[in-house]
Length: 126
Image (cartoon, rainbow, N blue to C red; front, side, top):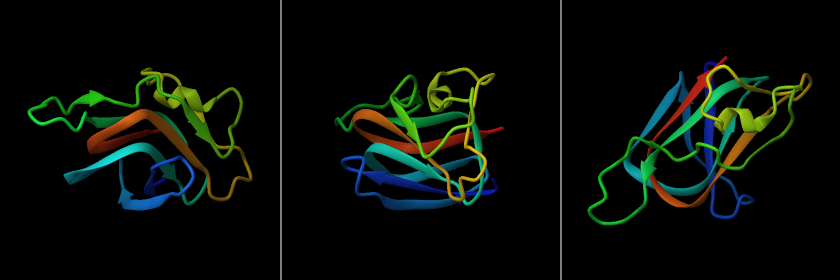
């Protein structure tokens, strides 16, 4: 899709929109704190890789190009087999997640497992 929405939640339940983006990436300046990130598409979508760049919110920490989403738990509103949602965080651009036909507003989320200071989210679309 050419347009998508990024949402965060403190618990994976109460989602708040933090960005409405177009293209493949969205930067945050200043960085935002998040543990849960959800990508919402306006129509069917397919993601090769979801990359979240940031660091632990610790004073003096400087590495922001670490992929925080790599191999983290993921869930989606639907999937088209064999494109399981875990493939969007597996680190391989040859695999992907695809929403199922008929899913009118598909979404996929990743749990970063703890709170990070995020500077950029990149979506590699199929």
